[in-house]
Structures are given as C-alpha cells and as structure tokens.
Length: 112
Image (cartoon, rainbow, N blue to C red; front, top):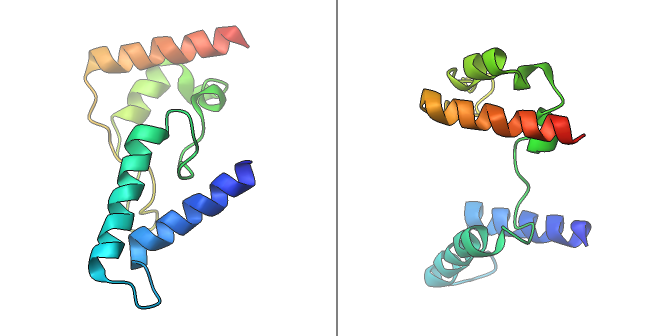
C-alpha cells in the first residue's frame, strides 16, 4: 500500500513539475496540479499523497535537538542555502509557538 502511495506521489510530483505529457491540453495539466493540491489539503490527513521532506515528529522527539533550548535555536535558524536548497526554511514561529512544539515533542518522547 505504501509503495502504491509513493508511486502515486511520484506521478503527482511529475505532473506538478512538468505537466501532463503526451499531448495533454494545458488545462488538463492545470487540472492535474489543482487535483494534487486538493489531495494534499483534503486527503493527506489520512492518505500519503506525497513524501514529506522531513522526518516524523516521533523520530525528531528521540533526538538531542528536541530539548527546549536546542529546539529554540534550530527553529530560529534558516537551514536552506545554495548548497542545501531543499532544507527546512525558518518557520518564523513565535516563542509561544516554539514552547508548544517543544511540549509536544516532550510528550512524544515521554510516550516512548
């Protein structure tokens, strides 16, 4: 099942990036991109629509960066640059939001 989801995600990414090939009309490619966007918004809470670039929070909670101070430093930094353009951007969270994320990760860590 996960393989099928990865194949579907790859196909959707190709369509989103290059459009539908093989003589598809421009509005068909646009419709496919819109369908992908809708699937990400409406279907991804239950279905894998595309692979996520980052690790799951259950894995993050196990690491040293999940502690409050390292997490605060990490979330205040920009991680993408010319040599690593796909890295996580600075999410520009408030201190309160960072504290909430930190508490969530602590709860995940405690649950293990």
